[in-house]
Length: 327
Ligand code: PMV
Image 1: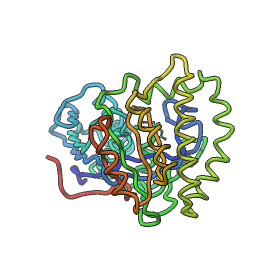
Image 2: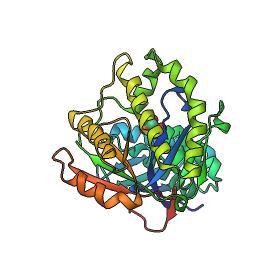
Image 3: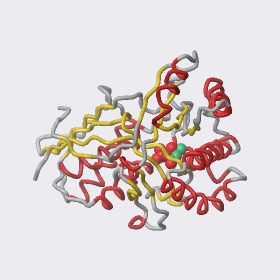
Image 4: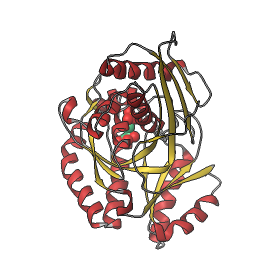
């Protein structure tokens, strides 16, 4: 048994969002979703299973975090059960960005943990099996396993709910620039938020519209139709936040600085700079643009007092093994 392995996985940004679960334990989503892996929001994780360890230890960005650690240990249990081993593990994870602020550290984190953990446990899983396993740690992590532009298939069972690559990273050179407006941690995690989805009176309508949106989004990406793609991504993000705002209790993630960026994105577009925004469960704003406009968008964002820093992302591969162990 190979007992130590390292993986690097990207976070991903969803253009059609996953929100709401039909099975909380298995993390089966209420609807399909489409995303792109992000080249510059990365988690590196090393996992070692060792008969000499008497307990699991989990270190995330140099901190031994009990809450996140417990979620990681549950995932190690899934891996141990598949591999039929009992050894305890040491897990060390390093993110190149702040965790739990809405930048989807759980997506990159659980994708990296799944690949490194499975390999360290001696399992040789297919991409589909890795995606199914990652999904159970954090839903959106299943989309960080395959390369490039990705669809999470809307299956009703664990075996049919996994992500597949639609196009490789080189297919379309669009850019996702994250404008970080605050490093405050979310008050309600997405795991808890998903459970509130059905309390919004608009959630059923959202589900009804999902299938058509999935078809359109795939077509716009395939055609590289940036305008249609951007309009749909933007309206989808606003719809997600409409569900947040109308849930009970309500979820208000956007800050004044986030709202200012949404207004500015629309203004810049009217002035001829084609940018669109998308959002996650958090306050930061993802600005989508074409490669030819990247420099101008970056310059504009960096001038704003609301923007603490920016993270520029290109389409990226999914999770990959690495021989550079963290410990
Ligand atoms: O995978 P989770 O539980 O972190 O949920 C992700 C939720 C959104 O980021 C808002 C949407 C998505 O599809 O990534």
